[in-house]
Image (cartoon, rainbow, N blue to C red; front, side, top):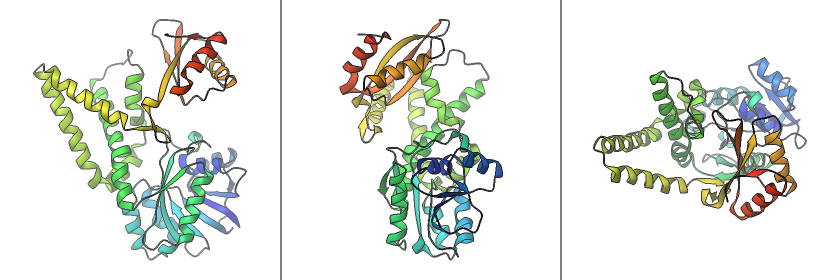
Length: 348
């Protein structure tokens, strides 16, 4: 018997297999033979033969596919969970399907990328990230424990919510940002001009606009009741800003920007810590191979935990800036250590 059957070898399913490598016996299934082959080749698990028993099944497919997969495998022993980004609709579909709800627990790892597919998967995708558990009223303790153990084994932090609480939360932290990023990028596309002057601000703002439209149409449709009011609220904020700009009213524009500052401070960056807990240490480097690896190696040798990294190339100059995000408490040590290693640490 396999420990885990993962149905769906996209970004999430393959990342689960990679995270569990060496811990659990994972078998994989996918309608796409090509994606399955890539996931197996990357070491996410073995190809499932369709017969081997499993202790737990994780459905890492689109929300609309969850019910059909659970029904198809319902005669097998074991428990089930899924990773649908909308929980209420899936929970209702399962309730109406006739499957044994005691064996099923909804879940949603709050981790992802704008890229999709097994090639984008990473063993560290879930590290330190919330993994929401959404048991129904019929979910058994065993099914809940199975998905909780799975989340912990992947390095995530389980958080238990109702389906309604989950859908309201992801509307704010995931679905609204997707709509906003897509809207900004759509305005750029309508201009039809090259964006040679674009920098990290535009790149950061529009990064998730590269996400799969087909996937997001389904997600937004299923969570429309929660997302639509937020989109209207965003629209009102933008309309107020546009009117203020037409009136040349800097006070109204400043009010929006300051409220934006306040909202940004509420966004955790890591394990409850926020932007105020982190600082950027910029390092100027030649635009040549090996610079990023060298800077990161020097930081590692000095015992500096780099939380994030961004590389900005300076237009028209043969240099760039590597920005290392470190905890505020490590700022002085990072600057001193990198300078001692011969790197050009920018600023004082």
